[in-house]
Length: 331
Image (tube, rainbow, N blue to C red; front, side, top):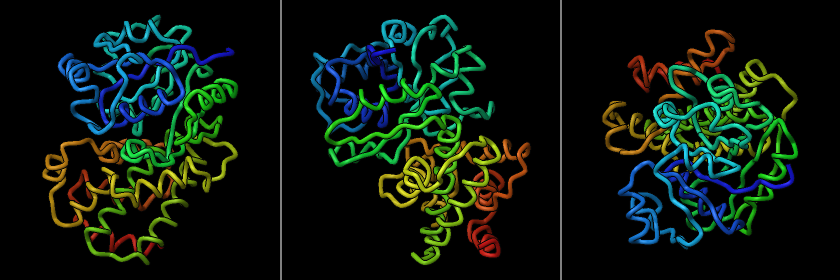
């Protein structure tokens, strides 16, 4: 493989829109699948996404839009998936294994497939027989809103095939985006799930009016917990302090743009989980991730008091203040 070829973005939300902007800063053209025809019509009318990151203007001559996901994939060489994890199975229900044949499939998901408890690379390999060397991952720290503002951002391109990871990194790098590479596909995917859970924990503590001192200790323990789980679930040599692990966790836990931190903050302030979700009108992946990691950890048996506490608050109606107080004994 000497070129990344024609790039396709799957998804019409905030993160997909940010990825499209980033890719088009270094590529002349992309294919872009958006499920809803009325959203595509809005693009043609306004020159921007009518629903998300509406301040980002696009040159529509650089984009071929599709509302047929199978055709979008077939007409592309590299496919970047930016569909929220709860909707992946529904979006892929009409896709045949042959559709992905010979393609480089890149997951930009920030979550895990609910109920299946699989990260995207495992889901693609198990359900569509995509070889692991044809699977890649894109991970932060990188908030879509900061991409829209053209603030310097960072991504990690990962693949078991180091050459593909390098080509992907080169294809999307620009004056506002710096990239590095990795071979830790599953570890990075699981880290992206965990950082959303820890961001909810940080938000809950914010809502409960715990101060910076406590937050610092919380984040330190989150990093240790993440390292322990990754070492058991996806064992390989890694440095948890690298940007794709600790960096992504910190930006998600502290940023004003973090949906997961926002969800946690609302819950800490006394909102019910359901009310907070309805008011946000956007998906906080950590809600689903907390349940998936809880169920996965029934196999791995890693001590994860922070992730477990978040799971119990979100899914078993544990009172937030009681849950955080119980955590203090683990720190």
